[in-house]
Image (cartoon, rainbow, N blue to C red; front, top):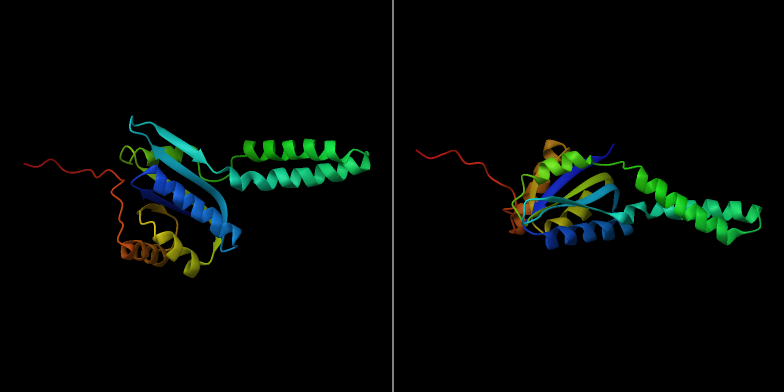
Length: 176
């Protein structure tokens, strides 16, 4: 079962750094991700989703491998790999599994203009190695499906970093 974690940052650049860090941690086999999206609230208030294409590369590679094998049978492995790779990438892109886009857009509406958030579905992680790396960027947790203890540990790690985000709108009651 995957865990959803959404962390808001004051700007798009920091959110993109967080995405890059998560991709690097995945390459080091410290975390397994199902989905990774940066949600940006532009200055004009519009929401833009920056989908992570790095997670789809497996479909293209798998398709190329199968295509190459089929190509060998028909004595044209390069053509088979090209067709298989294109098919694998297309199928991977068409099957949008992961965090619901409408859900991310709704939460993105709560960001201040110019801010961004990283939405990640984590299949497996080594929290003792991943959390300190990610906490360095600061941020503010806006949504998780973690246990209360795990969420609190993540909040404490981010708070200890000393870089809280003010990227989320705060509704204030009218003063009398």
